[in-house]
Image (tube, rainbow, N blue to C red; front, top):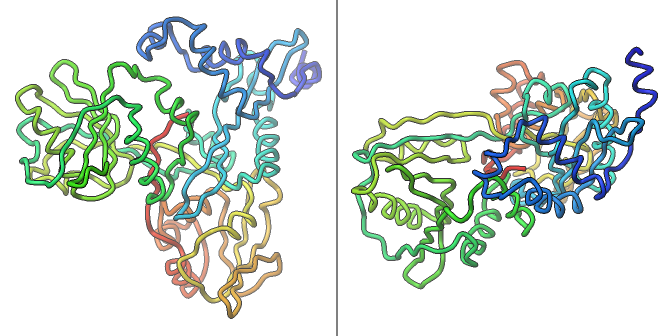
Length: 407
């Protein structure tokens, strides 16, 4: 039986809750999740992770291919989220649960699921999508592009910063302490790219962590207001930092004071930061190990709607994008940007001003401020004239994305 004949007997449909066990089995197979992985994540057995995933499946739009025996063989989940894009909240479609059994590979099943998912996102007014890539080249071919990095670091005990005077204090609390949520919510409002976390988002954040072993160190200012936190644990003389969040430099110094106070207990600090911002510059002894790696990818789902809601810094001379999208045909073509005398933006499909030739992947990196227009021009990821390039530099914010979630 050739590929076309095999595909004819398959059915594409919405994955309902009754298929939750099959959904989980496919994920475990594709991503090779072992029993020891479940145990390290704090789960007693497979049934517990299935129960934990039930709310996710209930909230998400999940689509899959089924064989003639109604067995789920290929799937994709669209996880409803909200993110801060340069101080504007967008509905974001988080793509997760992607997988196909190997015997059904190369039938174009996932391409069909991606196309259907993009249509669903557009229907749901989710103008942008995020995902954690198992293969960057694969998702680039589908229109996604890198939008954020992680920097992992190692600091020897002798390199820890000296303790400095700060007016506040640090208290150790449970990771679900209300002040953790208070700080994070303020932080997400201040930081481009960040997830506006719901209770379900927090559950996913801790999904593969042993929460019972994690501690929250919360920094309070002199008025008792929470200003930052650090999720950490200590094991085998290593101080592990999962994430450090602070609203100001006082809180940053206070939290590092807390870490340095463990000098006699540890030999090493290992941690992760979620911006392309090396922390070495902030330390007196900057000869620390830092490793940068791509983290999340993003994709503009609907160019016209995304641009209409985008918070440009200022206005500029009219110009138009000429866009190529490998899957979402509604994004192909011309999108002109014209500001009126009241600085209100109109997006039209009639060419106005000079062109900017760009694909959907590069457009996403551009608007998410992962790379600046001049850099993209220099590496020939966009083509335009020098005047329009200067306009792009002027109107697009330059704050890089912060994204520390995982789904």
